[in-house]
Amino acid sequence: MMVLAVLLTALTAGATEFITDVMVIGGSKNEVEELKTTYNAQGWTLVNNDLNAGCGSSSDFIYLLYKSEANTDGVNHGYITDFYIYGSENGIFEEKITYQDRTYYLVPFDGSSVFKKSKGDLNRGAGGRYIHLYYTMDPQSDKAVSVITFDNMQFNALGNMGLSGGINGYNLNAGCSSGENIYMHITTNNATTQPVEYIKYTYDTTNGLTKREESCSGYHTVTSSTNTFNNGWYVLSSSQSFDDRIEVSGMVNLILCDGCTLEAKKGLALYYGNTLNIFAQSEGANTGQLKAIATDNIFFSGIGGGKYSDGGTVTIYGGTVEAHSESGVAGIGAGYYGNDNGTLKIGDGVKVYGGDSKNPTTLIAKGPKDNVESRYRYMIAGGHVKGDANDDLKVNAADLVEMVNAKNDNASDKFVMKYADIDGDKKITQSDIDAVVKIILKK
Image 1 (tube, rainbow, N blue to C red):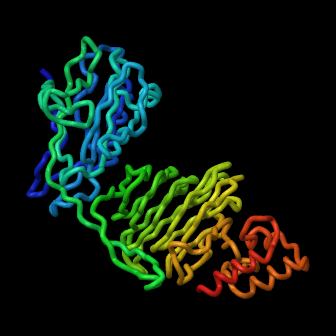
Image 2: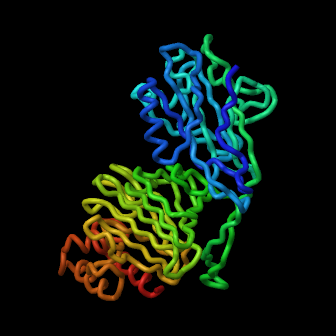
Image 3: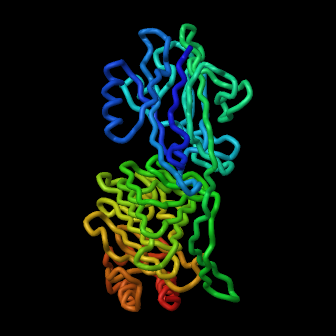
């Protein structure tokens, strides 16, 4: 009989321990031993049970590791809330799965080249089914995972649809005739989702521009494992830094908590048809920050598209946003050779920085005090504001002089054409001048 493996002690000194991160490692015995040492030094804890136990000498040694956090306030600060086991006969699976309106992500993996190629198959080399483990941080109730155990008991084990209970337990050695029966059990404890306050602007013809404080209860907490933002609300409650480009899909609302910085070293991928709304909790010096810095790749914008890709829609209601890229690619907008920079809307008093990496802290604009919901469309491209004809990084009356000169063929400056051609017809016309006048008058 397999010995019970307790992944996490549920209660320590009055505080409940909750799981914040998990991963699987696999490979030969020597490869796995080296990985154990490496990850132990990084603060990971090993569950010392081979998840391929009994499957023969050709099978990988596979182990689960975790990180946890002691909690005394009963609030969910970004904990794993459920797992999902997916087994298949052909090895076809998705990087993420949606089940009952919750998004489950493939558990991160490391190990030998073949184990990594298998994307963390828990039966790698055993000859059985292809089995992959997923996790979610989406709330479904005021619960989060505090204990994981492995044993040979199917009753109340984790099933193959993210459910624990009944006889739905899924054998992690399924299809391996000589392997031990290994089932995964989870224990959850109360961890309520604490409402997070943020500031939002609205506009109507009666009251004009109105600022109001709102709160959000159903959200994902941004952690070191959050490599995609997919539909819904996300809260940055602690500073995080990401080495890889973050994908934003669907309608995403991001709250930057005071004193917190989200650093995306390769920027945010926001393609045409997707939307990112950015909120802050205050307007002071301590407001949250987003730094989307797409360096080391001349094709990516800071926030937006990649090579030949258009940008999405960005609305910045608050915070300090710094977005820049290489070689004049848009700070916020289309990628290299993209056709459409998308739409950028900025709320009152918001500071936005942008441009290429050679000039990363140039102040681009403060949002005009007009309708933030339907403000005239303008884009940041290569560190400039659409409509800035004299290269002073703001739209004012001096730009009109340059534009009128261009319209009258007294100037054919390429810069004027690039940044003041509002309607995109490749010439300065009266409609461009009227659009800039509209922006100036509404400041």
